[in-house]
Length: 111
Image 1 (tube, rainbow, N blue to C red):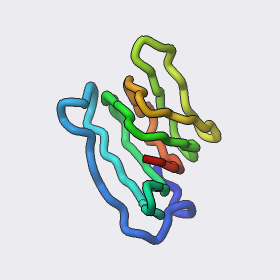
Image 2: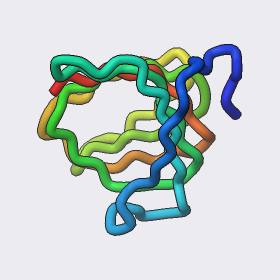
Image 3: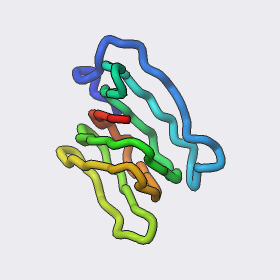
């Protein structure tokens, strides 16, 4: 569950992965976009449980604040992500994102 102490005062954007990418459940994403300028995007992102395919054209750094997710590169070893973990995803990454427990992360994306 989202810790309101870490939620910014901005209005959240609610979305879901494209239906053709969803592999399990019906994950709901909530994003609080804090900065969008010159190809840089940062804020907070939360997702409810589910699994979907991902394909990155951009660079992303993130830090897990709450929850448990599993990021699995195509043909690679699953990476379990829990509170306190950080990860960099580089352009060209393809695989799956599985949210096991509702996950909240800080993110910085550079196009």
